[in-house]
Amino acid sequence: KPDLYGLEGAAISAVQCPGTWFMCNDIGHYVANRILYCRLPGGRYLHYHRPELHPDTDKLNRGPSLRLTFEGYNSNAAKGPVGWYRMETFGGRLAENVTQAVAADIQFEALARCEARGYPVVMHTHDEGVAEVPVVVGSADEMSAIMAERPAWASWWPIRAAGNECWRYGK
Image (cartoon, rainbow, N blue to C red; front, side, top):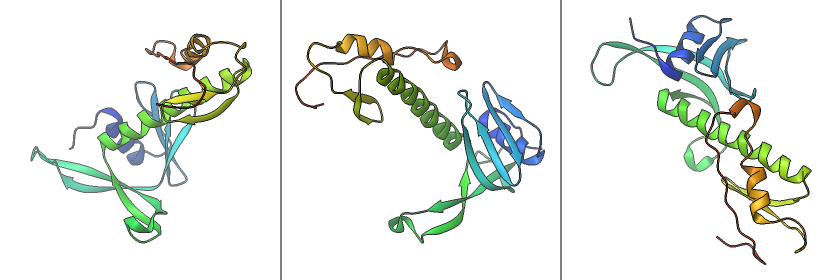
């Protein structure tokens, strides 16, 4: 019987036992209606359609294991035929998906706080927000402090922000 632990173990357990929540710290996995739901700490969900488990051998030859697959949509013709196809995932990819999604949730909340406090966001990238304000309004330090405020669901996370003031955007 394969050992199940971490995000991958929680996801596999959820596929094996639909209707039951399996947790890995503050990340939950649950299967209903042939969808594997991954509940993020902020309450948002990632969805993996039609999950399936396939018998496999552990990559380090430690014995039997299970391979998790789901159906995903390819919209990039350069990466193969456009449409639905079965994709394989594993613990590292699940962790990457959770990490990127949680980072986006933190940034989204930070940008919304900036907007609410008088910093109109005109652009953002994966790790920064740009606001355009009159010279006499606010400061980069004040906006950085707003961005570094932690959401209630991430109260113990080390979140930092830094910024600068300039006449035009630049790295």
